Structures are given as C-alpha cells and as structure tokens.
Length: 487
Image (cartoon, rainbow, N blue to C red):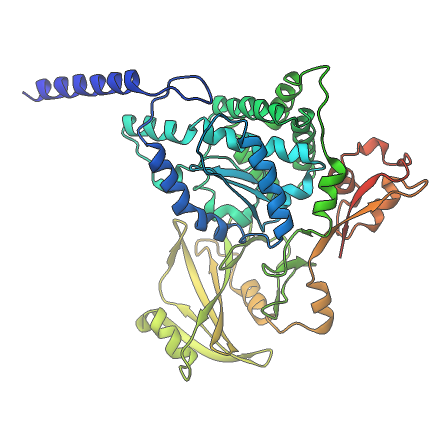
C-alpha cells in the first residue's frame, strides 16, 4: 500500500513537472521557454517589498538629485532597448562606499557610489546597469524559485533577489544571504543580454571590458578583509578575468560608439568617496561620527563591520567580538533599571557604576554564556548615558574555551568613548572625488602623492583613472581629466 502511494506520488510529480515545462511561456528577452512558478505580478511585489530594506541595508539613498537623475536617464535609455513593454523601472544610487551593483525583481536596479567612483565614463556604468537589467528581463529569479519548489528546497522571499554584488566588504555582510548567487550560465547570459542592450543604446561596447579590467585590478590591491569576501562571492560565479575575455570577444568591429567620459566625470565631481559622515569615518584605528559627536578606538588587526544600526569589531577568527549600538531610555530611568529591563535581573552577575570621560556608565557580566552566530560566548555589557535619552552600548563577547583571551581589549574600547575634539571634527570629515586637469609634465607618480588616502596612493590613483601602473612615470597629456581623492 505504501509503495503504491509513493509510486502514484512520483507519477503525479513527474506529470506536474512535465505539464509545467510544456506550458511555460517564452521569454521575450532570451527567446527561450522558461519554467517559472512566480508570476510577473508576484515578482513585482517581491521587489516593492524588499526595496526599502535594501536601501536601509546599504546606507540609504545618496542625496544628490542631479546624479540620481543622470543614472535614471542611463537606465531608461537601456531599458528602452530591452524588449519589455510596459515595464516599470526604478534606478537608485546607494550611499555606500563598497563597489556593488544588483537588482530586485520588478525592475529595481541599484548601483553604489563606490561603484560610480571606480568607473571612468558613462559607457562603463551603462555596461553594469545593462547587466543588472538583463538579470531582470531574463527572469533568473523566477527560474531559481521554480527549480527550488520542484526540488522541495523552497526559498525565502528574501533569498530570491536578482543580481550579485560585484565587490563587497563586511559592511554588507548582514545582507549577504539576501543577495543570493546566480549560476555561471546565468551570469554569462546576463553579460550577453546586457551587451546587446548597450550596443543598441549606442554605448561604447568596450566599456564593459574597461570596467571589468579595473575591477580585477581593484581586487588585487584590496585589503585582506575585503579580499576574503570578494573570493567568496566569485567562488560560484565567472571570475572577473573570464568575463573580461568574453566581453572583449563580443565587441563589434568597425562601429563607432560613444563613451561620454567628460560628461561622466563632470557629474561625479565632488561626490563623496569612502565612508560618509552620516555613517561614521574610520581613520588611524579610530571610529569618528561627526553627526552623533563621538569617537572610540579600534584595536589593531580588528575587522570592522559598519552596519546601519551597529558597528561590529572582531578578530579574524571571531574569538573576540565587540558590538556597539544605541538604546533609547525613559527620562529618570537609571542605567541599572534599563539593564534589568533588557537582561534578566537574575542573569546579571554583578554591575559597577563608573565614569567614562565625564559620562555616567555601568558595566556588568552575564552569568551564563550567550549564543551569537551559532557560537557560545562570555559576555560583558557597558551602558553609557550620553544624555538626551540616548544610551550607547558596548557588548563584548569572548570565546570561553580560549583561556588566552579576556575582556581587557574590549574594556579599553568602551573606556575610550568620548565626544569629538575640534581636531577630530576635522579628521571626521568625509573624502571627496575632485576632477582636475593634468598640467604640463604631470605624471601619475607625482599626482598620486596628493591623494587624500593613507595607503597605496599610486596603486589606487592608477586604478581609479584607468592608468597602467608601469606607466606611472610617463607625463600625462596636458588637459587630461583626472580623478583625485581629497579630504
């Protein structure tokens, strides 16, 4: 009886799959029939619901109306060639320093200002946007959703986003699971479709090659912190170098296209580079936040995840973790009362009132280990009364099985919290991109010394400006437009 039941069930599933495949619609973008369960309306709803979450996770919308309209115009010029009539598209610049581009189903396409800083002309940006538009038109999300349903795996709505981060760092690690990976074939299909769109929109087809080439160089000079995440992203995708070769092979010959370099550089002139003041600035092993008026030290060799609502410091193996965030408090309520309202009174081992740079504070240990990201930790909490109902909190976590570590470094971080000095207010200002003209006999080697960054000035100067490193001592053509990073 049981065998008969499973036999009938298998027949039903096979029939269901066959009918689904045989009844699936032809995709106008790819020309192929697709197995999908999500309707286009459902895809649109997913994009609309997740849109504000993506904005929040990536630092908000970059507040530059002219730049937003410029990217929107580029996107609309490409979608006009995408054979998707009556589609609604939304193009957003995210206020994030990471180099990133992705899209949601329903036509929500995102680029970060970090990506805009890396590009050198409009054709390069068009190639990135075209790639993300192609993920949407090819309905890659709907295909993955259908396959997962038929295999019994299932997908959370948060995991059916279209697009893949090009480069990210730990600032976006919290949404890493949301931006799920596409297969190698899907990425290459998006490259092919995207190239078709930008050809039709009359953009220089070599823009894709130039951008991917610069992206490849950026991965090689990035810090170990960024490099580890870059490698994890590319592990299931075509490597940048592979996509460069394919991009180069697909460039039509004897056709004149435009790249709009001068126009592009003029529109990103004075754009914020790196961390924005609203997100806090990291310099010289210190975190500065000018808008909220505080700073604290960062231990050497700690990695930093600057998220929307918290700052997380941690060692490479996460033996030690320090989480900084804020709490609201009711007028007249003591720090001890606040602590007991959040943590069980019986779980607080002991507390002590202290003074942290003229601010009333308490710290206490929790009696029992707590679980964070699936691991057990001993925990010490600092609460600092910053005034006006705002309480800053440091949660210090250490691995109890490692007898060589203790709360010492975490204590020093919490005790270093202070209001900004006048000198620190200057340091806490963000960096900007400034477009200048090369003068007679200017060389990359000389100009790079004026870059407002701490490390690898020449390397980053050459990458940002599309200059070969081995030509850094050769004079630039007088009047050449150059990207500089200034404080």
